[in-house]
Length: 284
Image (cartoon, rainbow, N blue to C red; front, side, top):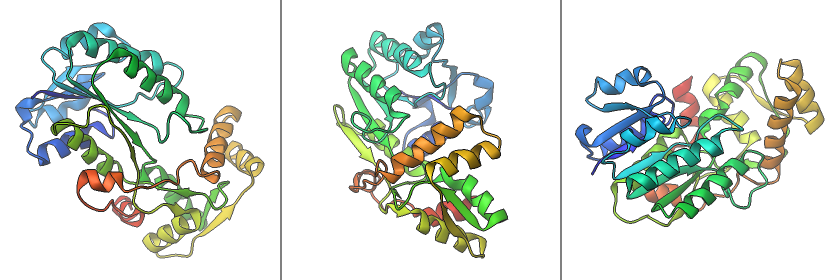
């Protein structure tokens, strides 16, 4: 079986390839797709075939998908353009007769008020309309999203957010990558939508405590209002739109958008998910 992993020069794609290899896939059966193939030279040196795979360029997609049985579509990062770009990949996968398309979506993409979910919801709808056999992986937050807070706390002794007592059921990218490898390699899973999350939804007081443990210093959670959060982000150099976007994410966390954890990720990978403090410690 030939498996193509997109985003091979990004942060998640290479980890999926690592997980596929660890679970017995042969390098000869893997294809790494990257917008700029030279950016994935490290994979090529490991015997993985690297192909140009630019979501915005349909002419790059068709030849790359020839003979591919399973495709991991890692969601793009170009806000405002990625629904159309994802549509290009879905259409190419349908034309190529791909037997399984796995998409990395957002938690509860069909119902969540999170500001970044609309693109994922539209992509899921496009996949359903295409009739390509598919598996939807709705990844909760990556624990690595909080490495910036670790760095700030090292300087200030504080974690700043406007999330109240909201919880985040995060897991590191490697755990989500392992789940992707499982559904790519195993028979079945087609037609499933998996809500993936870490085993322990943590509060920002717990985030501060985890950072304190890693840094070996006192760290507290500074509870901001949304207006205070926006003002602080703008003072740090963010433009008004970006500051508002971040504050809206905080509001979603405050309202419980990332708090659900039902153990699906742990069941798929066959072990407990990695605790937040371990991810922070490894990064530090």
